[in-house]
Length: 146
Image 1 (cartoon, rainbow, N blue to C red):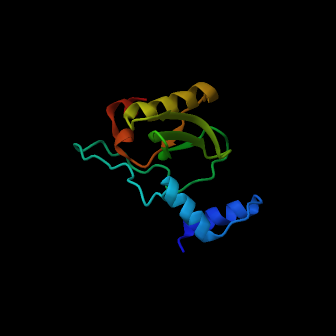
Image 2 (image 1 turned 30 degrees about the vertical axis):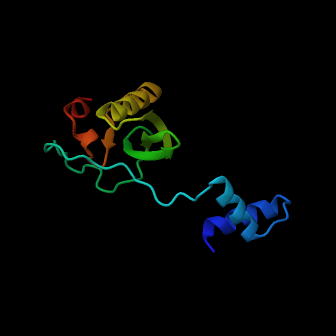
């Protein structure tokens, strides 16, 4: 028995519906409901070589005060309409998200907008060390100027 079929059967049973696994399978087959098997994740595109910055954070993840060290990264979220990309900026002192941006395409603008939100919300009074994973969005000329 497939895991998805037994899970649907258990969900129906927990909601008070009396039916067996075979009946669930027959009804799903009749109306054309199938489990989704795997999916494609977004693929990285190869481009020209970019600017690489040295690792200034050096695994020092516990700053003494807010707005000393920020880290940023991008993740992708699968939706019914396709992929969404979420870029976040986290203050390592408070471990809170201080800036974010979400778009349907992963471009340099997504990380720049997340950083701009963090700067606008926190208004740091001194220079902040911003650490990233050196992905292509973080190696653009605009990112290095910001």
